[in-house]
Image (cartoon, rainbow, N blue to C red; front, side, top):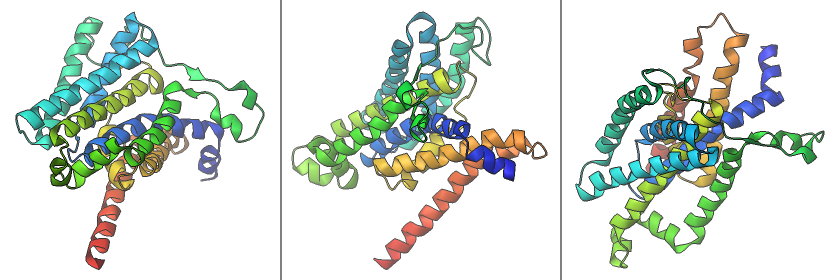
Length: 306
C-alpha cells in the first residue's frame, strides 16, 4: 500500500494522469457539444479510432501537425456522415452512432492491413511521427510549477479548449442557440434559427474534438496504431459528459477523474503482480458505471423534490 501511495504522489504519476486525461477530455468536450444540441453522439469511440489511424498514416508522409489536422478532419467528416443520416434521412442518432462504431472497428483493421502491407494488428512497420512535448525550462527547479513542463502540445490545447468552449456556450449568441436547440427546439425555431443547421454543426464539431483525441492517443500516448486501441474511451467520455453536469468545467473535472483511474490501472500491475492485470484494467469502466449510477440516483432525488 505504501508503494502505491508513493507512486501516486510522484511526478511520474501526475504526468501519466495528464497523458491519460487528454484524449478523454477531447472526446468529452465533443460529446458535450452534441449532447447540448439534442443529438447524443455515441460514435465518439469510432470517431477516435478512425482519426487515430488517419493521423498515424498521414504522419508517415507529412509533418505531425498535418497529421493531427488530418485526424481532426476525419472526425469532422464522420460527424457530417452522422448528420446526413440523422438529420436528412431521419435515422435514429443512436443507431447511426453504433453503425459508425462498427464501421470503425472493422474498417480500421482493413485499412491498416493495406497501409502496412498485411499487418492487421499494429502499425509497427510504419515510421509514424509523434506530437512534440512543450518544455518550459524557466520552471525547472520550481516546485509545483515544474509539473507544467514536458506535456503534449495537445494537452495545452485541450485546457484552452475548455475555456473557449465555456466562453462560446455562455458568452455568445451562438452558444445560446446551441443550448436552446437542445433544451427546447421550438423556441429557437420560432425565433428564426435553423435547428437542423445548428445540430449539423454540433455533430461536426463533436467529431472534430473526438478526432483530436484520437490523434493524441495514437501520436503521443502510444506512438503508432493498434487494433481497437481506443479501448472504450469514447464510451467513458459519454459518462464523463453526464458526470460533469453537461458543463465544460465539469467535463474537465470528470475527465481528470477518469484519467486518474486509468493512470492507476497503468501503475498498479507492477506493484500488485498477484492481481490479474485484466482485472486491474477494468477499473476505469467500473468507475464509469458507479459514477453513472450515482448520477442517476442524484438526478432522481432532485426530480422527486421538485
